[in-house]
Image (tube, rainbow, N blue to C red; front, top):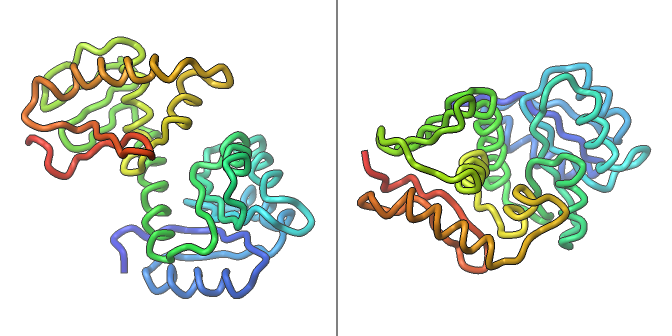
Length: 232
């Protein structure tokens, strides 16, 4: 069993997939509810307390995108939503994130990866509810909008603070360049050179004065915080 037990709602009309997920996650100690169509899933999500929704995109009665949008509009709290779908185009993923999905997993998928993503989403959601977030040597104070590394206050410009906040909220996931641009500039992205410049300035403050780098580039993918070998 995992040390963290999650209450999860699976909204999935393919029963074999739902059963496989349930067998794996329940064996890990998680508690699951099920819905086989969108409207039923929406009602369960709004009337019960779940740590996470696993939501298929192609659903009868109400499409997964509509379910996600309705949950975001009607729920009094933020419920982390992981979308499962056979649709793997960039446009489909953008549509999912636009209506409020927190993560996206394309079928076929690894059940082990599914659980890891569920745990990461739940942990991130709990962290986001706190004004002060501690990850490794980093401490983010959202109220004061300050960041410390190993107890030292970092002299960040506003854009560096925003980039680091996105990376901390996403940790341990990689944030793609397009996702980062969307978070920073919305639907009016700036030139890629501007993002490169801001990342360079952030590294100068975040990493250069310290013995190891926390901000890593995953070439062809994006950026991620590497906390494993951090300074104490």
